[in-house]
Image (cartoon, rainbow, N blue to C red; front, top):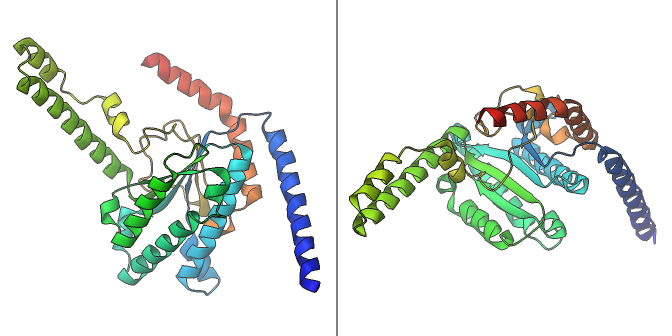
Length: 289
């Protein structure tokens, strides 16, 4: 009986909290709401160290924070959320830590596909961006399964940068663009098109900015409106360097597991404050091109 009353009280409080969030988001919607927010989830290890607990506990607390942030973003109307989960450089950490992180990553990817998860609640499409061949096979297979299972979802888009660096993404885009150009020229040659046609295509063989952007992992997503790195750090750490020219960069002080609803709301208010300036810079860039 006691448990039933506690459960009812908990459900009531959750309902009230949900209503209050909707009211606040309605007020925020009078200003521009970002379409895409990208997070560098920094501070999990420092969070664990400050509390004298195992590093894995900090990463688990970070995943709990991520789940809450995703829900708040989707309730607010943010269509795209991208997180920097694991850099290629992170493979240089101690083998035991890397192995532990891979195990945790697979566990959390599997949880995302459970019936009661936020993915199914909002019809989320999941992307994994990076050199997935560097991942352990169980994690890679779990990531591929998640992408395949949610490929037809039409709700928000959640992208996870894992085994990722921006320089690696750019190199990958150059390689893909080169292969595409080469194959096109070879096809024309094999099909015996006029020499002039082959020559024209060869002269057009230079890789353009448009070619690169079509082969970025982010090709189907708009550039981030906000890029946020928690723990007060001001480095991008090789994250979406190409895509963040006109993003609003923010560096909130809380460690990632401490990042909460109020920090997200404040970030959106800060974005709305500078939005006219960002739009002005974007419009000037378009005129130059």
